[in-house]
Length: 454
Image (tube, rainbow, N blue to C red; front, side, top):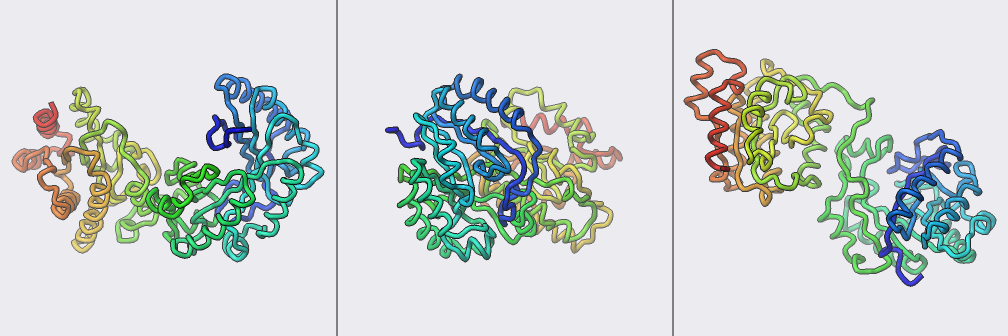
């Protein structure tokens, strides 16, 4: 095959059955899953995939992703493995990628599944070529010697070798200088014996030990800049693929971890669940395309916020304008900065901060923390927004934090208040609650937006 696999048209299918024979890797949650599925059901799924995806799109490479090892006969009978390769060949596919731990790679099974006229690339997760890391930190259950033995077996039987390298898979590797030395040693080895290498950025898998370290702020995933700085040396090698975000990472919490966050205090304000989300919004998140103006909006007791009187009032008043589609609504609240797309996500749909329990000291702490959160978000995304509007008069601490942040960033001229002190004072004197649902408040909001955006 003339073309390297990296440059060929590829399609992936997840095939899960049984459980990974090892299932103890520190960073992996998939290996702890148990999936009940019959071989016949898997065949039907694969057949549909071949007919509806592979043939229609002219796919050249089929990648089969198991939650374990595709060559482990306790998970996938060898007859089924061969069936998948043969069906791919019939569909005109040039190569199939399968995954396996080294202990299942042997002459017997390789000779059985071998199909003439199609390449089979067997991917092995080496992660890092360092036995101490593999054993002490990754709990991988293999050694570098095991990997090299499997490589030799694949070569002897005419199979291609694909190697997965995992970066930042443990808190000890957050020292990027140490990490680079280990990565350099690893790449020097695997490029000598592999047909292709994939360098994968680590993200927290639910049910893994790494997830617990992430949620307790002992570990962070590498952002794009950190990742490419670490692995950029190999970016131009045609055999190497750099996989920064294969999971489309967002913070996720399984049901058993979704505790109610209802209370007042520093432990709530700086709760780890809020902190990992704020880190995500600054280092991984990108505002939706076409959103040119940011509108800071208040939170509400009702969750999601769209059920509250305030939100129904102001959205009902401004959503019909042509410029509305260019407005990005961002909530400021105890959890921090919350872009509109995430208001239905946990914990933003399941927290409460009883205002009447606040102390003056806690209000000052809230302003300090929120100022930094706003500042980080705006600094990271300031190229995306032309102007910033504020509809938060009933939340003086959040208003103060926003103003502080913009002052420190030197962006005060970009920040526009959408309701005057006079209007708000008049509403309060009337005793109207909630104040920001008052017709005069939403009218002034609408008029301000029209003034700047029409």
